[in-house]
Amino acid sequence: MASAERFLVLGSNSFSGATFVDYLAEKGYDVVATSRSPEPHEAMLPYKWRKHPGSVRFEKVDINHDLDALGGLVKRERFSHVVNFAAQSMVGQSWDHPDDWMMTNVVSTVRLHVLLRSLDFLDRYVHVTTPEVYGSTEGWVKEGTPFNPSTPYAVSRAAGDMSLKTFVDTFHLPAVSTRAANVYGPGQQLYRIVPRTVFAAMTGQKLRLDGGGLSERVFIHMRDVSDATLKIALKGNIGDTYHISGYELVTIRKLVEIILAKMGKAFDECVELGPERPGKDAAYMLDSAKLRTELGWKDEISLEAGVEDVTAWARRFEKELPNLPSTYIHKP
Image (cartoon, rainbow, N blue to C red; front, top):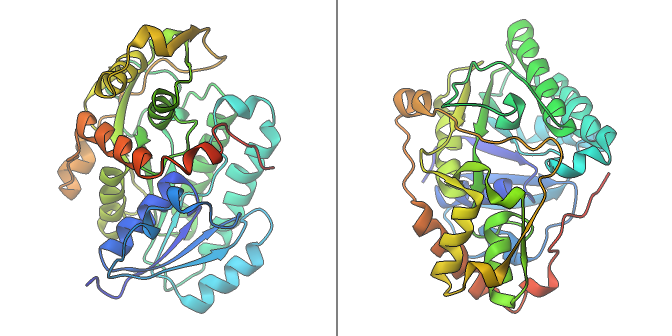
């Protein structure tokens, strides 16, 4: 069983948040999970798929509107660790409602930091952010790479990240930050590229690839990311940022080809090519040497094994998936 640490996970209905909650419970931790919406279908909540040594309790809390309630919860439960996945996180859609992205990712996030800065029982606050703050990059970038955001989403995350540094420097908020490359795994929303490809192949739908799928990415299984996030939460150096990434670089097109080949489908029959969306960055190549060296982390799940994991999940919930959202639904 895990020790006395108690975790609060904000944004637990997100794919990353739900998978991390599942990982914590599997390791024996007691977790309070919060999100602004009621829990979604079981297919999107890995912590409901099996029993764990640890416990999970869900509470509906919106950081944009329920900050007083959140403050009461934190002070009542005296969590040792708060991990924040709560964010407006879609890149393309951030052009349509940039003020909503600024509200959640800047204003409400800063208000959260004000709430946390005076807690004497908090061991670590883990701020989950994004490599989008770097903009389009060349080569393997390290944590100190200057920000060069190119979308409203990236600008909002960069602003939140920069503000957090001032709280660490001025008020000694015990914060650490994480930036992961493109995460995937079972339970991910159907509009993300890996489950979207699997779902399209299963249902005979055409898959559209922006820009011909030439963008390069390092895809990493969310279980590997969860393992890294827990290591950072427990032993990360306060004030530091850690990249969570593998080194298996592929184009989006190659990724789709791998998935379709595993499912016995022909690329030309399943895919149509489209123009690139505005402001999309060409590559994210995150150097994770710091995390590997300082905290002894390494990724364990290959892209091929990860794709099989997602395919098995999709087949398990094959009857339910057509009734779940297949496109992003914006909530202000």
